[in-house]
Image 1: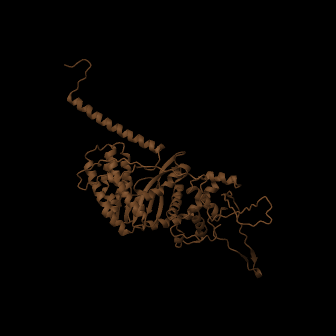
Image 2: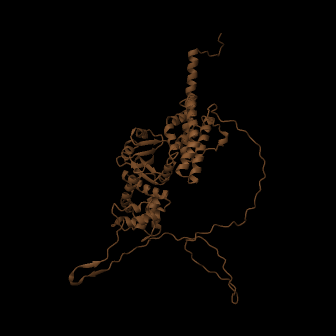
Image 3: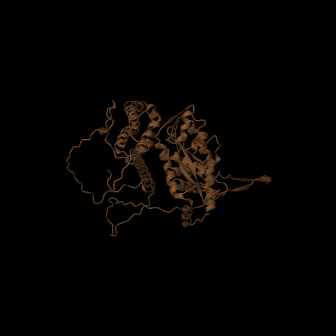
Length: 498
C-alpha cells in the first residue's frame, strides 16, 4: 500500500525520468564547458598550458591489453638546499658596442700637477634623443646650352610617392609603427604634432595607400613562390572591416594565411567571407601537401588530384585539453603520449637533424605511438557519450587520424600547423589596437604588408631596414627584376639609406 506523501512511478515513467536526468546532465556539462571557454576568451591567456606528464608513467602496451595509465609510485626524497648570498651590486650587462658614445671627461677637483695619469674609471648610462623631422632638399643646377639649344638639368631620383612630400624614411616609420609595433595612425599623428609636424589624417592615409600599392608587386611575387612549393600550411583568422553599405557597422572578413616551411615565405590574403571560394581559387593550380586544421572547407581538397591533406596535431591536443574537466584520466593519457611525440620533434629541431635522421626517428619511435593511440581512440569511442567533451575530442581525432599520421612518413612535413599560427599572432595584437580596417580595400592592403613583414620575421630581417631600402629602389625597377628585393633574398647594403 502506498503511504501518504510517497510518489509512485510506473516503469515507463521511471525510465523516462532516468533518460531526462541523463540528458540534463549532458546539457549541464555542455553549458559548463561553454562557460569555461567564454571565460577563457574574455579573461584567460591564449597560451595552452599542459601539466607535464612523465612518459615513464604512461603505459604503452603495444598489445593493447592495458589502455589506462599505469599506477604511479611515489618515493620520498630528502635534500638540503644551499642558498648563496646575493651580491649587493650585481654587474650590469655592458651596453652595445655599436652605439655612438658621447665622451664626458671628468677630472679631479684637486690640483693634479705632478701626478701621473694611470687610467680611467668608466661609467656608462644609456641616453636617447627624441625623433625629429628634417627636410631633404634636392637642389638641381640648371644650365643654358649654347646657341639656345635648351636647358641642362640634373635628374631627380625615383621617389616612392613622386607627388607626396613624404620621403622613404617617413613612409617606413609609419608602416613599421602601425603593422609591426601596432600603433594606430591617429596616435602617430599626435606624436608627430608634439615634435613640430602637424599632418592631417587624410594626408597620412594617402601616404599609406600609395606605399602599400607600390609594394603589391612584391606580394604577388611571394604568392607565386609559395604556390610553386610542394608543401603549404594554411589557416584563416577574422578581421572586422567597416562596411560602407551598413553605416556605423562592421563586416566580419577573413585573412587567409598561407605558409611555406621550405621557402620560409608567408602570404596573407583578404576575403570577405570564410567559404570555400577563396581557398579553391587561390589553390586551383597548386599541387603538393596541404596542412590545415579541421575546418570542413578544406575537406574539398581531399578530392583534388595532386593534393595530399595533412592534419594538425595541435588542434587535436587542444580538444583533449578542453575535455580535461570532463574526463581527466582519458585526457591526460592521450596528451601524455602526444608529449612524447612533441619532445622528439623538439630534439630533432634543436639538433638540426637531417632528413634521413628525422625519418628514421619518426619511423622507429613516433609511428608505434601513433598506431597505439589510433587503436586506443577506436576502443574508447564506444565507451564515452558522443555529446560529452571527451567524446567529441575522440571523434575529432579519430575522423582525421589518417591525415594526422602522414607527417611521420615524410621528413619535410611538420607535426602541426603551429608555424603558421605564429604568423597570425601579430594580427591578433593589431586587432586590439586599431580594432578594424576602414574598408575592404584597406584590409587587402593590410594583407600585403603583413605578408612582407611576416616573411622578414621568418628570415630574422629588421623590417625597418628592409622597407627603407626597398622604398628607395623599387620605383626604378621593372616587374621582372624584383626578386632581390624580396625579404628572403634581400641583402642590406644601405646605399642611399638615411
